[in-house]
Image (spheres, rainbow over the protein chains, first blue to last red):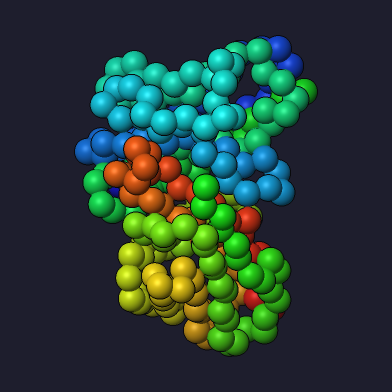
Amino acid sequence: EPEVTQTPSHQVTQMGQEVILRCVPISNHLYFYWYRQILGQKVEFLVSFYNNEISEKSEIFDDQFSVERPDGSNFTLKIRSTKLEDSAMYFCASLPVGARYTFGSGTRLTVV
Amino acid sequence: KNEVEQSPQNLTAQEGEFITINCSYSVGISALHWLQQHPGGGIVSLFMLSSGKKKHGRLIATINIQEKHSSLHITASHPRDSAVYICAVWGGLDYGGSQGNLIFGKGTKLSVKP
């Protein structure tokens, strides 16, 4: 079964540094999402991406965050100047029209 | 904004028991998802429902659109079913201009003892 692949599985970074989380969605999917889950809390929507542009973003997704699909396959989430409260599990998901989401296995980001 | 409530928050069962996890939401939706999150954190989609009932192995999911309620049942539970089960609702791709992001419940932590 096709998978959504996320790398790295775990990243530790110093506060103030930039991180790039990478995702390879399923190739024929059209909609791509980033979600995050702070430890012990529910999963929260960050941003959705369709037709090579952001289609919706949440209040969490401020100027610190950006997404790109630089080469038509990878889908990246960049977090500039990381803060302690950015520590969370970040999930990428992709979706064809009218079907189930496929989630990546997540990147655990720890900001120290 | 849709509010998604799950009950119970925590559930401990003996192997072989029949398990029910409930989900209710406040605003009409296009689809509801049941997800399973393993201890390592990965999320797997179990079902997507827009009406009626679906069955996959020992898992059964039902939804009542009028009552805005869904249930996930596990028959003959097994320790390997231990995980967090998450209900998430989806307005659909034409829902209020949204491209269909999910709104998640807090999850139900299930522990099945041998």
